[in-house]
Length: 139
Image (cartoon, rainbow, N blue to C red):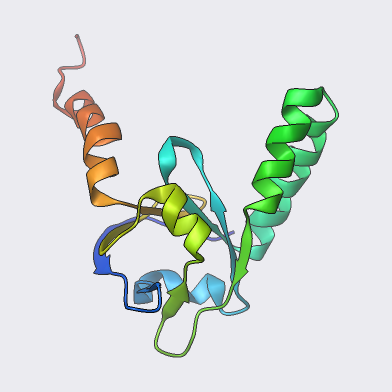
C-alpha cells in the first residue's frame, strides 16, 4: 500500500497540467483518480485506494438520500488521470475550478493519497492548525 509524505510547490502549465513530484509517481504508473476532497482540495488516489473509496461511498449511499447525492457528486466529479513521461498530470477545468487552482499549486502527501491545493486556500484552512505542533503536551 502506497504512503505519501512531503510538500512541493509547482505551477499549472497553459494546458492545465501540473508536474507530479518524482517521489510520488511510482504508484501512479498505471494512472490514478483525481477527485474533489474535503476542505476544497483535490485528492489523487492510486487505483487501489480509489477502489476502497468507492466501496465506502457505495456503502454510505445506501443509508439515505443525502449520502446518495454525495456519492453521486463524488463519482460524477472524479476523473481518471494518466501521468505522462514528463510527470505531468492534467487537471480538468471543473476540478481546477472546485479547488481554486490558478497558477501556483501546492502538492503534498496526505498518507494514503496525494492532495492538490491552491496555496491561498491551504493558508486559510490548514496552516492555522500548525499551532498544534507548537503547543506543550500539557496544554
